[in-house]
Length: 178
Image 1 (cartoon, rainbow, N blue to C red):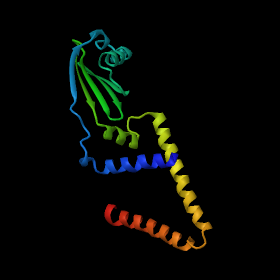
Image 2 (cartoon, rainbow, N blue to C red):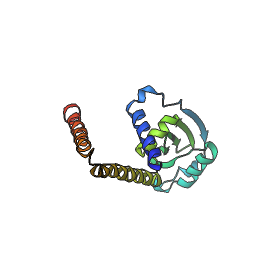
Image 3 (cartoon, helix red, strand yellow):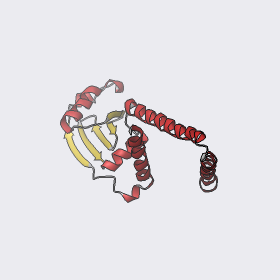
């Protein structure tokens, strides 16, 4: 039953990934403006900006979620980007004044599930869950294939159907994808 739940999850999200137009997966982004301590970003050494203070500020004030994806310092501005499954927050900061624009883009539940399916912005622990799921589904599939060898009356028809299915998938790839 554990593999059934995982298989169902990946089957449904595979379908929603292929047909994103069926569902509205993006909500309206929220834009916030403010001013933070300009000393955090206005340093002569571009690598010496106060990254921890910036991250903590946005997490406390706006409850940004997801992992810190990037902090980019370029000339007069600094950009702080947070990403997670179905979530993105991007702060653009003026280094001279400390003024910023924060755009928070939450996505729908379907978009979150699709990101989990792909392992996008999920971190190493979720990627391990995906690997475990793939191994588990492979073992279940191989167990089913192995069982056909013990069913004398269905062995030939089962192996023929297996071969036809594999050949059909290969032909679809060759003629419609490749």
